Image 1: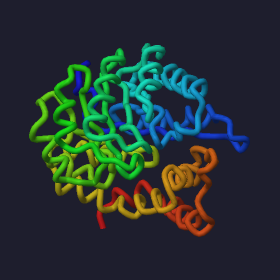
Image 2: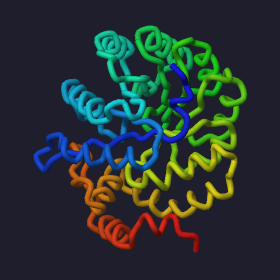
Image 3: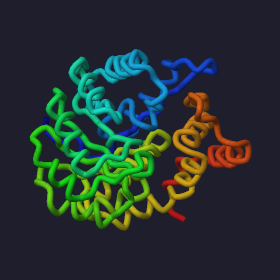
Image 4: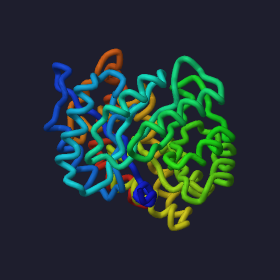
Length: 301
């Protein structure tokens, strides 16, 4: 794989649901076209933002097939296959059909809190089983464990591990990864609001939540940062702070779905145990949407 396909802005796509908790494929197509027209660089299907943990394997495959069909080769597709059982993840990778998939995103094992050696063992088995390059995903806030920089550096030597989506929030850890991994290994931001600082430290882009809502604005931010136009990039990113606050105040993707609802993209239904945002937060999001969100973000005050 040409890893430059994973430079820039990847979008961790939302999964829209109907009021009856079924997949809303009409809304998914609407979201997909909005994202693609927003100038992003690749799509990520079945990440945390897509509520993958509440979807069956059959539903996940149906969503992937739908996105592949509607994308029609326009953008690379990264597909999420991860879990806290190495044997289960390996089995799913061995059984997966890879047509239309450019890379695999695999989250660090959660809940059972492996040692650093356990992470290495897990990802080596995942990379050996996958027929596509693997992007690791370190997100201690969800997994209850941190993959240390030395662990990522060790795994970067595996020929089928090409990147780390890093969401530890630790910029020093990110700098160590950028400094000590091979030139063709990618550090990818897993935190929208730290993307510009991470690019300044050596990251090549982001897998973004906010780009579901504002693909033009966030992809512009990332493009500017990759051109080392950091002041301009941060100018846009500062104006996205308010949006970021309401996206995550009551959990992801509850705030995101509320924003997309008020922009007319989809409903705000989530799969339990996740629930829509509170009435007070929805009122805040509604006021934001009514103020012509796109123009407000990009206009210099």
